[in-house]
Length: 394
Image 1 (cartoon, helix red, strand yellow):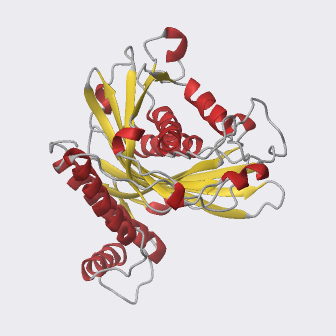
Image 2 (image 1 turned 180 degrees about the horizontal axis):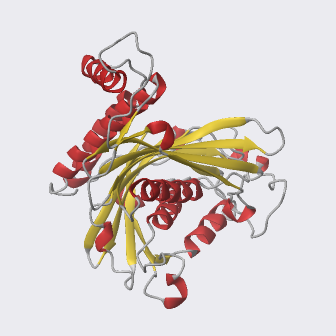
């Protein structure tokens, strides 16, 4: 049984990284010759990668790291540990038989995207009892892996998370092959088949498509609500009880430090997730003038690595509202501390609920209207997820 935070040290041992920060990462080019060909790697099963780890919040000495001022477990901190756990599962799965004894694994694993995190039981967590993570590799491509993770407490499932990881070579300059996956029994086959369907949906989900007829009708309805019936009038009108999307955002700047980096001096995906979740929560709290609850996180995308010398700019927008729910779009931009060029590296879609009905948010430009439509689509995905939550979990 593994515990957090020692999981991080286990990963360092696997890839041969000693503790300590180096402004120039230790050269791992000598490990490239040990990268195997895929045909030389043994086939693996889901069971081979199954592992568990414990977040020991029952220990007073560890609890402060995981709770907020109300004594509740922090969603962002759990996301940070989940990302690290997904990396550890990759290490459990990839097997290189010809690797000489004592030679570090010539791989690096990075987060590509997080599919969905439905937190339907999260607010029932007891902050005095340990939380258990268990997970496995449920699908693989040539160099990509889908990781399925469950978060449990007292044998009750808190949430189920799907994470896509990518295997890179020892110097992070190219992709690296992973073992083929062969389901070992009927239950594993069902799990694998579901993963194949998810992979097909992912390809469609991230494709850029024009607004549908329903979307176009919604855009026109919003235009009429905010401009009236006189199409000559260019003045925008804010209906009663509504808020412009352009007034619904919060921005923060973050300076990462070496404690948040990997062996290549790139910032951990989990660190990005924690900070994005926390600014999303604060934005929703300011918008509603209350203390809301995080319900679901969908489609976290990681487009490029973030170097340790970068500055992070995070902006969270309320892009859609429905009764007491809000859809938050959080955009992460990286500013290189040497060139000061800004690049967008991540987006987060987070559903948050308030105790009472929230003010309706409305777009005031075409770009914001596209965000509004995307937010509505994400909220509908969340609704479908909740409708299916009573189905048996594989």
